[in-house]
Length: 168
Image (cartoon, rainbow, N blue to C red):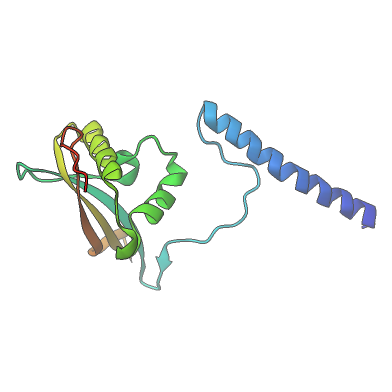
């Protein structure tokens, strides 16, 4: 190939990538989230072994003060406004971090309370953030879940919007 041809291909690709992502953003704002024609490769988050594989799954459990069984929701059910592709990143950065980064302001707790009430229509008191690992194995009739291990669980005490605010 001639150097002019290579240069033209390179320039075309460099122009096309930002244009494509701009179109995705505009269409995603008005309709739904389309996938671009060219996507850089990602890395799988499923650990595969010879005899099976494991998948991590996060859940949000909403508890009431009445002691009823919790309502267990997937993160995309608890945060329906977020685009589906953004939910794992949102959970990872805000909820699935180490203990020192899991501090929530009163404003954040009130917002989580509003989300819980809106989604479950219950008077929520606590949220449990649960990270589980599901282990699957191959069987003659297909895949089967062998076991589930709870990897992490922590509780967030929610603040009702009508609860008086304390100042220190």
